[in-house]
Length: 298
Image (cartoon, rainbow, N blue to C red; front, side, top):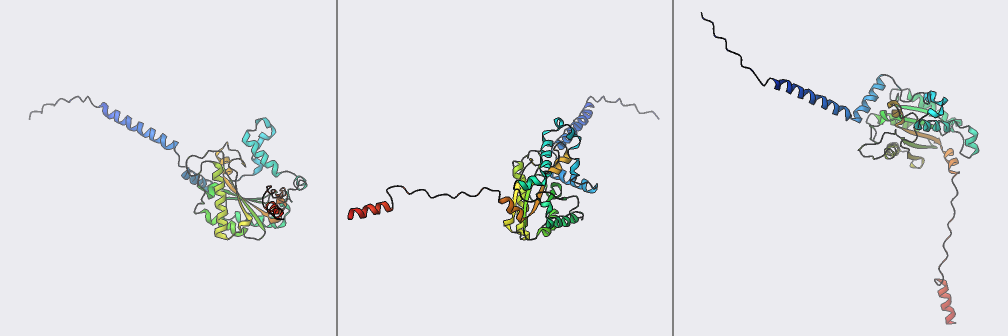
């Protein structure tokens, strides 16, 4: 049986298109990956950080003694943001005589009632609801209840997360006591806000503090006379803004609890109101006209 004649292969001059198409596909995937890395979803990144720190049992608030580190030995090497931290800690470590002698009111650390309340709050912090979200300490100003942003707020938002309402309710129930003065302070890191509802860290920190105050009043019946909200932006840090962990600790809301007598003592430092005298009546008006009219009739 005769063999079939071998058909000569046709030379394909367009095989380069296959390699070129593969190259273009890989190039497209490369730039798409670069774009996705450059535009990180801050909300998802915050949730991821909180989940990882919770799973690894990491605390958002470390030992304050380790904040400054060895830089304290050489002030010339301390960056500007670290100087702000040291200034804050110096205010907390001022001797009691300085506060009382200057008329700033008694040291809150000597208040037996605040000591008991602080102990109760610290026991709650050890529970599953507040663990790794809240830090409680007692200093000269009063009880400081620090709420970590990652545990209560989404990045760039002032409204509480759904899961954070339960934690704030636990704190509110413990603070529903008579004769307490509460100031809610909002803080942020030094990262500028980008887009969103709030243009500056001042507005964001103040809005978060106001949200907590309104929640206390509307949901738990707190008296508005003993509540106030303040926003400090990035200018009251508790850690360095040079690291992601430090910035995470600076993004917080502090609930400062004092006894009412302390507030009255601080209010006594304000200058007294100067009585305003009524301006003299202009000449030729009022009673003078009536007197002149009566003299003319006589």
